[in-house]
Amino acid sequence: MAVALAGAAPAHAQSVDDVVVSPQASGRWLRAESQHVVVYSDENPEILRKTVADLEALDQLLRGLYGRQDGPPPRKFPIYLVRAAEVGANMNTQYRRFMPSAAVTALSLDVAEVEDIFAVVVRDDFAFFGVVDWTAGDDVVLGAYAFHFFSENFPFRQPRWLTKGAAIYYSSVDIQPKTLAIGRTPALFDDALAMRGLERIPDIIAETGDAWSLPERQRFDAQSALLVRYLWADPDRKARLATYLDRVAGAEGDPKAIWAEVFGQPLEALPDALRAFVRKEPVVTTLTRVGGPAAPIKIRRMPAGADDLILELQQMKTGAAPDRADLLSKIRKAAARRPDERYSRQALARAEITLGDRDKGEKLLTQLLAEDGDNLQALRLMGTSKLYRAAADKANRTALLAQSEAYLRKADAAEPNDYQTLFLLAQTMTEGDTPSPERLALLRRAVTLAPEVTKIRLVAAMAFLYADDAATAYQLLKPISADPNGGLAASQAKRVLDAMASVAAQTDPK
Image 1 (tube, one colour):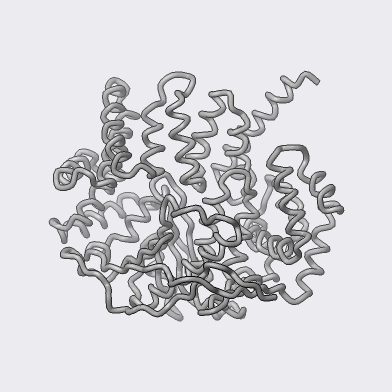
Image 2 (spheres, one colour):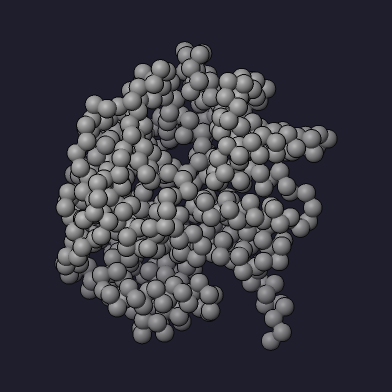
């Protein structure tokens, strides 16, 4: 099937020798920025430029298909590309700079924390999977961006299985100069994996079930992808899915009963339908790319300090540094080699505040702010440091919260749509049993700008509960609670929802 996709432009060739070099920039790592993404890589500029152009093509496709053509995004999505392990190697050295405990087979990690939202991705053609790689090595890259797109643009009652499945569905898009083809079997999530244990499909759809075994959790993504391919392969099923989602979003009743009513068959019949579906050829839709010139891509070389610190900095933002002392020592040694480089000094300041000597970290930040009073990261880090101090010093809590708020107000003025700043500002306003209207507004804006961050969702949900807005709290918590790979956040969300249901049952006049 072939249709025209208005507004999607071919990625015209651009020169690869126009990399901008700043006075302090002499490292290997490159930073490529386009309209919707910022991609970091130490591969050559030509590969980097093609990857960014493909990501923009995918973004244009998704915005056209899902009606999200309403202005620039609030925040460009950062992706860090790392090289795959060499054949025969027993570890992926680059990836383990970011995640030391990662298995050699690790391919990517999507991080959504208060400190940052980004993805670290191994770029490879994955020929060893035995499936045709239609994306020339960018499966995981495209999937990471698609996951971010759906998380960002459908922030409230989008089921986790649909977000994950849609991301994998679009990871296999075949991007050519004049066409895009969607609907092929994803190279990294083949049907053989998805077909094992299909009896859990009703639980995935109904967003129920707590006792997920490790193999079942590992199959969740593959089965979500198969489910999305099945539902989207037929226009009637796709339309019924939209109706189903609207009904579920309204919390109208049991999802299994709603499914049976909307689709005309019980949810338990779905596994057999999926088995029949995979025996057929994939339904591939080819879209013609038409439109104006490709979006510009700016590439600049990073400071030399990035060679030693760029992935270590991102490791600190995962919220789970495996060896804090080792990471701190590594950053201190790397920064000491370049004491005058701003990039290294700012990296060291973050490490000291997060892992080491907070006094030293604040001294570095004071120097950085003396050089540039609008340095967003330095302002935000200083506000964060004061929040840390306030949590540990009850006697001076009020004064420290005021200091934190002052730095964060300056950060907000420098960048009004920074979700980290908005959330941190809300954390300076925690006094009293009932959250203030300003705190609620800040949390609502932070969730809107960063719906992927479960910690922000949890904090916001509790604030809205205390403000007697249970409906908003439900919308925030339900997608988290139903994620079998959601860990502690999913457990916390489920406990709160169970408590809400119990209270509602006790107060129901029936």
